[in-house]
Amino acid sequence: MKTIVHKADSRGFANHGWLKSYHTFSFASYQNKECMNFGALRVLNDDIVQSKMGFGTHPHQNMEIISIPLKGALSHKDSMENKRSIEVGEVQVMSAGTGLTHSEFNDSKTEDVNFLQLWIIPEQMGVEPNYEQRKFHAEHQRNKLQTIVAPKDKLDGDALPINQQAYIYRADLESGRSISLQVKNNNNGLYIFVVDGKVEVNGNVLLSRDAIGVWEKERIDVSGKEDSKIIIIEVPMN
Image (cartoon, one colour):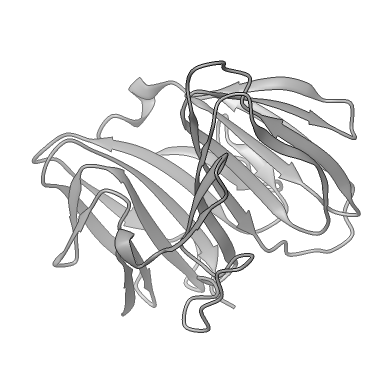
């Protein structure tokens, strides 16, 4: 078994005034050769967008992009003629493939938006771009895993499709409760990100915004030391 722990205060940080962004992995001006990715997971940004501000229209290509709002709502618009709001409880996926452009704005006049943005390296380049979003109900992740993203050829329930043999799960753990995680493939690793609370993973105590990556291990246990919200990203390691 191999592990790597990323504490919240070790993340890169960029303050653009309208945007405050914490980078788990190297991104933009934050470059750390020791923290480039976790397998196919290339980016995990924790973004706070000021009211009435946002990301103007910009391009992406050959990347699986997942957005998970934690507070507030984002207005989305893209070159595939999608124009929607994404809110807490919903998840958005974009397979950029051959190329697309999009914008994301906080339309609130008073409240900041906080969302996680994940980039996963695709298993196939040059696919047709795709956009989907879906609401996931909190009761389905209470003390158990809810699959929110899965490979497009192995969809599980209401999971959103991406172009990679990767999965994303959410779980809300009550204090004293535990869940077991088992990889779908021995080549996969598990990256556990604590959104809120306090958990223990294989003897490592993690607080809010801490994370741990585990690989070369088929199964691990996560225990809630207090009421906690976690996101688990399972990705190929090579």
